[in-house]
Length: 333
Image 1 (cartoon, rainbow, N blue to C red):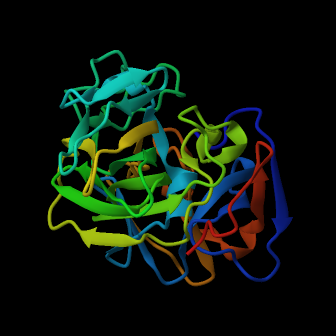
Image 2 (cartoon, rainbow, N blue to C red):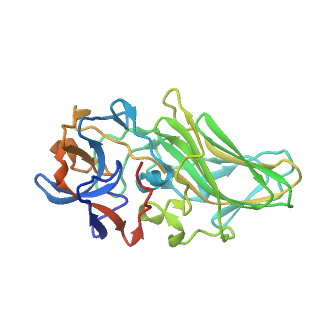
Image 3 (cartoon, helix red, strand yellow):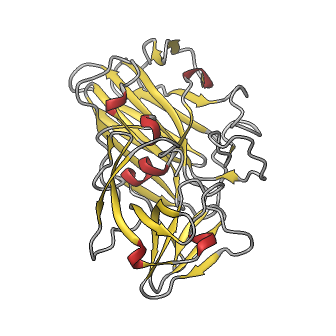
C-alpha cells in the first residue's frame, strides 16, 4: 500500500459489519494465502474490472477520483521550488517560495516546471514522468509513462481591496483561469486525472507567510501532498479527448487592475497511481457475492490480480486512520 503505508506503519480500523465500505476505501481483508492484508476496495459482484493504459475502469467507465481520493492515492513527484523557472523578470526565488517584484497590471508572470535532471524519477525531459516506485529497492521492471499528473500551489496575493487578480494553471494542453477579488491566500490543485482536466481552489485560513506548511496542515501519503481543506468535489472538470503528455506544466499570475505582489509556495508536482494488469490479464469478472481489491503500489502488490476476486465476507473492516493521521471521511464516492 505504499507510499501511503510503509513497513512498520500502524493503522486503526473498525469492523465493516454486513455492509461493504464504498469503492476506493482502504479495507482489512483475509487474503487466500497471506493472512490479513490491507487493500483498496475496487470492484463489487457483477462488475468487470480492467486495468489498461494505467487507468482503472469498471464496466468500461474510468473510475473517477474526488479530491480527497486523489490525496489518498497520489504520489509527490517533485517539491523543489528550484525546478520552476521564471519566464519573465518579475520573479525571485527566496528560500522555498517564489516572490514577484511587482507584476504590472495585465501582464502574466509565468513560472514553468523545468526539472534539471537531479531527480532520477524525472526521465526524458520536462513534464514526462514514469511509474517507478522510489520506495521499492532495486526495481527492475520496464517503466511506463504516467499521463495523470498535476500541480498544487499556495498563492498569496497582496493588493488593495477591490482589486482583481488572475491565476492561470496549465497542465499539458489544458488550462484553468481563476479570479481572486482583493488579497489573500489561495490553494490551487489542477491536473490531468482519470481522463479529465480537473481544478479545485479554496482559501487558506491562518496564512503561512510563504513558509512550508507543517505536517498537521497537509494531507496525503507521508503528509507531503495537499494542504488541508480539500473540497469534496472538483470545482471544474473538462474531458480530455485523447491521451496527452503532461507538458508543459506552468502557473501564471497577474492583476487586472493595478500592480500587485504575489508569493507562490508549496509548489508541488503529483502523479496518480499507474494501475497495472497482471501479466496478459487486463480484465476480471467479479462474481456475485465477491469483491475485487488492489494495492496502492501495483508494481509490488499482491492482490486480486493474482488471487482473483475475494468472497465479500473476506472484507472484515475499514481502515479509519494510518500513521496517526485521520483519513478523510469523504475518501469514498
